[in-house]
Image 1 (spheres, rainbow, N blue to C red):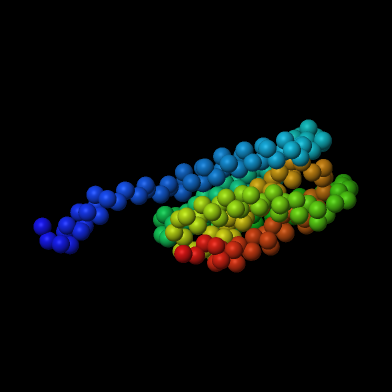
Image 2 (cartoon, rainbow, N blue to C red):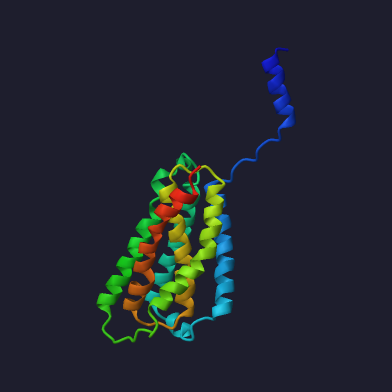
Length: 211
C-alpha cells in the first residue's frame, strides 16, 4: 500500500463520520415547535387580552392571525432553506414569507378602509413595538445560532428572513395579549415597523452568518 493510500486509510479509521444535516422541513419544524412553546409561555406570563371572546367572533381576527401564523411558518422554512449553500433546491419558495407579509398588510389596509365604526386605539404606541422587539430577541438568537452552524451563502437574505420570523412571533404574542381594537394601531405599531426592523437582518446576516 502506498503512503497516500495508507494516510487516507488512517484518516478513515480515526475520524468519526459527520452526521447529515437536517432537511429544511425538519429544521423549520423544530423551530416551529419551539416557537409554539415560547408563545404559550409568553402568554401565560403576559396574560390573554380580556376581550378575547369578543375578538373570536370576528372573522377579520381569524384572517389576521391565520396570515400571521402562515408568515411564521413560511419564514421558518425559508430561513431553514437559506441555511444551505444551494438553498436545498427550494429557490422558488424562499420568497414566500415576503409575499405573505405583503398579503397581511394589504388585508389590514383594506379592513381599515372598510371600517365604519369608531375604534379607540390604546394609549400605548411605541411600547407595543418595544415589546414585540424584546419578545423577538430570544427566537432570533436561536435561529441565527442554528443558521450559523450550517453553510449559508445567502447570509443577508437569511438574516432578514430570520428577523421576520422572530418579529412575527413577537407580534403574535402581543396581538393576543394587548387590548386593541384599532386596525390603524396594529398597522402603524405592529406590522409596518417589523418590516422595517427586519432589514437589520442585512447587517446581522453579514456580521454573524458569514463563514
